[in-house]
Image (cartoon, rainbow, N blue to C red; front, side, top):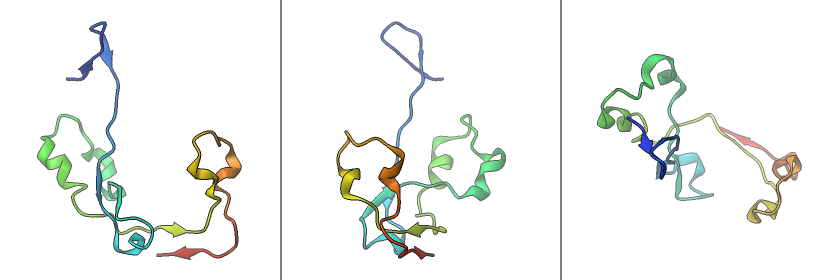
Length: 96
């Protein structure tokens, strides 16, 4: 059953669950959004499943793969909203 808005109509919403950071990302941040392992995508992300079972999917940090590269500090300003904001600042990339 979904949430209801002020007018009693169905309200679509989402929540970002954060967890401890994956080991390869700890130098950037101590928390990260929970990422569901793609192995669980096919038929397992069913909203009728019990919440504790669904939370088990994101309890441990997803190991990756991730790619890390420096980007502009422009990301720190919500007013900057253009495709170039995430362009790598250099060719230095780390993948794990």
